[in-house]
Structure formats: structure tokens, C-alpha cells
Length: 428
Image (cartoon, helix red, strand yellow):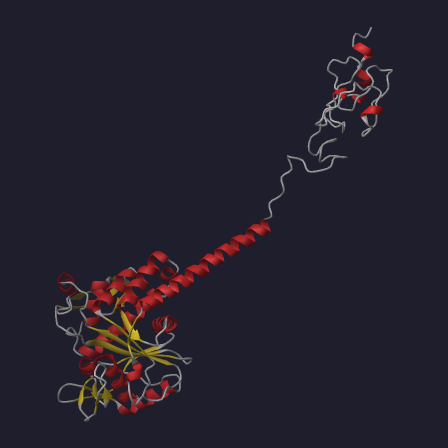
């Protein structure tokens, strides 16, 4: 005999479990269809829950009632994606367990936008920071009677022996001495053009004529008398503008930009890039500059680099060999500064820019792009894509030891540079 009330048996349990109110016995009425109002159900205890809970469908205390969840929908148990669940057959709406797949395309897009924005902001900030550090001290507009501008761009690069900013200890370490004022230890013309870049050293002992010029501070015009002297005397007499005027007058080349660096700045740049590696063909020593080098490839720090480019007493042809050493080192330095390991490394780039820009003195029209173009051209020369040479000399000198240029070769050289043609002239 079935002991379950109202004849409840396992053969019809499946029709009652999880459904709306139904008859309590096997012979009783089946559960009304989904959505039938409670008043029309076979059994109704009259209780209506305001929140939608129908006590009449609850089996608690009603022996003839099947188990009911109490929700008028008749839906009790279900699982997302399963029968009767919100994601299953007949289920509507979204299940709480449903997790949308990540939109990788959207994520990649916004990541790329963020990275590009950061790079642009950093680049613009760096540009304005670096631009503000340039010392635009030289006004080339005061230079008078200038040659016509040719094709390409000509830079006059000057290394001065200025000791400004050096302590006594630094002067001793760098073997600079303590002379007052400043003179030019090196002078070079760098031509940047479509037919190749050319770096030409101007020996400081070159014999030149001082032309008529306007004083840089007085504004007074000083008439030329045909006076001849060493090239570096022009700088000592009235600074950068007279030097530019003298170079233009004696060569016929138009100088577009002027760049000058002193002892302290030169050493600082070398140290900032972590030293510069060069191959010294023959070892030499010089007690005046502090040079003490063996032959072979080696990396020079700032102090050693300064000694290398200043040494002249160790060579028979003192000034000519020094200009060759200066070309070699400056090209190697430019190559080191322009490498990805420096440009793409902020911990190396910013100290290098800071050391270099602080110590440079340039003309008022010089932009960072012009300066970058100069460095890339020097790197090109160092890499073999350009040409480096000394100004052609005649092999003669004045009674005072001034070096005389080969006028015919200089004329050809200047014509090729002005027309941006490949340089065929060889230097001394």
C-alpha cells in the first residue's frame, strides 16, 4: 500500500517537480498550464503575496499540494544554458553566469592610441625642452658684404679653448692651463648637400686677410687694410662674427650656420655618451695636452678625448695632424650620439642633450633640426658616405710660419660646394 499522502507515487513525480500547483493525488487534476491565473487553478488557498510569491502553490502544510517554488511563472530550478534556465530552451533574458568574450580588437585599438599619445607628448616636450637650452648667441645678420648663398648648407664648426665654468681642479685634470679669454683650437666647414657631405678642416695657422668688418659690440665699421694674419687671430680680435666674415671673404663660401663648443662642454658630451671608441694609428704622448696613447682601438673618456684633439706638439706637421685627429674624433662622436643606443635610451639621451646643448653656442637662426642635420652629416662622413679633408695648401708658408692655401684648388673646391657637386679636390 502506498503510504505517501494522496497516493503520491514515483511514476508521476516528474510532472509535479518544479511546476505550478497541481492536484495532490495521482487522480487529481494536473497542474494548470504556464500563465493560468491563480483563481482558475484547481486548488487555491486564496493567499496572494504582494511580491508575486503565491503561497497557494507551496506544498508546505497542504498535503494534497505538489512542491511549488511559489513564483507564478512556474519556473523554479534551472541553470544557465540548461533546460528551463535563462539561457536554455524557452528561457529568456541573460543569465547571471554569462560572461561576454573580451573585445580584443577594441583593447588593441585603445592601447595603440594610448602609446602613440604618450610618445607624441614626450617627443613634443623633449623638443621644446631641448630647444630652450640652445644658446643662440651669434648674430650672423651683423656680418657685412656676404657671398651669395649656394646650394646645400654650410656650417662653420669651431672648438674654442674657453675655460669658462671650469674649476681649478678641472683645469688641472684637463690640462687646459689658465689663460684668460678664448681662442679657436679647431675650425671646420661642414657642407651638407645632395651630392654628399664634406668636412673641411681649416688649419688655425692658415694665412688669411682680415677684411672690412663691423664690430660685434661697437657696431663700428673697421676698414680692411690688407692685413694678413693667422686665421685664429680673427676670432681673438672680434669673436665669431669676424671669424665668419674672414672665412667667407677668403673662401667665397656663404656660411649658413655657426656652432661653437668649449673645453668643458666637449668633455661633458663624451662622458655623457659613455666614451667614444676610435682607432689610433700611431701612439703618441704630449705633456702639454696630457696625451698618452698607444696604437690601436680604444674608448676615450672626456679627459682623454680632449687631450687627443688638442695635441699638436707630438707631431712634426703639428697643425695638420691635429686637424686630422679632430676630424676623426668629431665624426666618431657624432656617430656615437646618433646611434639608436643613445637616441632611444632616455637615460643616455637626456644627459647627452643636456651636456651638449648647454655647452654649444650657435647662431640665432639655428634650429634643432639644423643641429640634427649637422650631426647626421658628420656621422655620414664617419661612415664613409662623405668626405673629410684639410684645406688644400700650396706647400709654402710665410716668414711667420703661416700656411698658404693653394688658390687654384680652393677655387675649384668652392665652386663644387656652391653648386653642390661631388668634391674632386684633395686636401693636404
